[in-house]
Length: 162
Image (cartoon, rainbow, N blue to C red):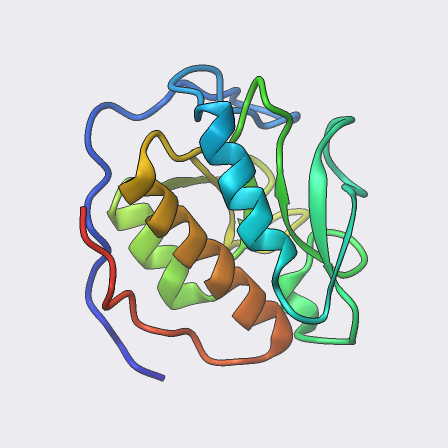
């Protein structure tokens, strides 16, 4: 596994979020256009089914791996990531330990309130993207969640600028 050292830092203050489940982003909401651009990318992942989330609030769109994968990488069933409804625009996903550390250090994510207890310790809420550069970082994180669920090694964020 390549051990890259950082993601670009997310600028500005951390968004407000709920301290318990349902775990949601309350402000700095991603523009609807960016949420849909992200969702279009997410729907293009190979070997993934699009379903309503099996664990989140109504209206949450989820990615389910069609084949068996890494059992540590799923929230419920084979759901490894989901995008919350438009009023929120954040995502939950399970990341590999290294990508998790990068997301946390760069200010892109926070731990799920139940992480390490009822779900993976690397279950995070990733803040919704506010601009195109943030969209690229969030998309990279989704791809790392997909790779982890699929049993593939993480990839370095070499193309990311912020």
